[in-house]
Length: 131
Image (spheres, rainbow, N blue to C red):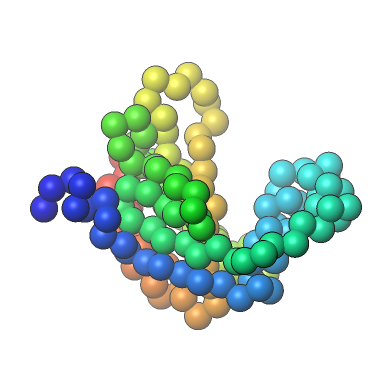
């Protein structure tokens, strides 16, 4: 199988309830700091639709946004599954080539309720590609 075909093979495709997505967005704002939390509280951005997330061995699609983590410019470092208290989250950490930054980029993917077993399978599949 060539690389282009491998990039199109989905490991998982998840959809979320409105409540699950709201918890994830709120967690993201709290994680970034108090000012982001206040902005969230003031704006209360209403989502017109809840994005679906798809994961391959190379990229994560969050709605229409593509977040690559494994290609010529990026190397997958590790994949973790964490319990935040209210929901589980998958952290995909990668390293950019030619980057002097000490801080590694992380893609956060919420795990839908009842999909933890699938998330563990994705974790095992991706961990085999980690450096």
